Image (cartoon, rainbow over all chains, first blue to last red):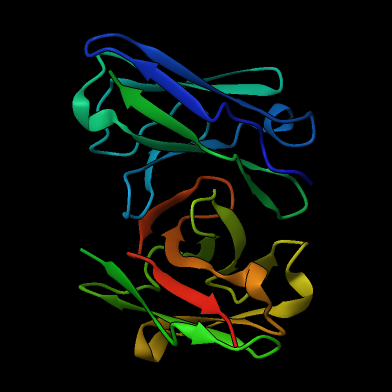
Length: 110
Length: 120
């Protein structure tokens, strides 16, 4: 199975909202409600932001939200802040006990 | 709070075996029906799931790596390990260990990562 498809870059000004897409197939993103999103600052380990499409772990601000339509999942960052500048990765259960990651999207806060 | 730390050789020769250990501190890696995994990231590239091991001992591996990968857990030492056989330069990456609840809901605790370079 191929990696999930994400745009390589996204950008927005402070206070704005940005949405990052993650496209898979009916065998992964579209077939299960098990999409996760991670934030990764340069040189740091990833941090879980969203799981099961739209659930937030304790401590993750509600500025981060997730959704899914068909084979595409989305992460929306509202009220952009400077510290949101980071890489964002989606992940999906791919069936048959397999996990897929997206190629990652670098978010720039202008 | 549980913290994870990867350790192992930073340089491995081609065709040899890459071995890494993840040690937990400040808590038990085997609490809460654990699901322990390894994820890697080649320099400047995206994340790749290597696989995971359940508290039951069941392992799940990335199909593209399955023939070369072995994972195990030593709860007495609060450690779990990764072995990748017959490595090539394509296995050069930062290797992360991580903990989650299951294969479906992501990894909520990560180590800081360890760079492993495959070179002669």
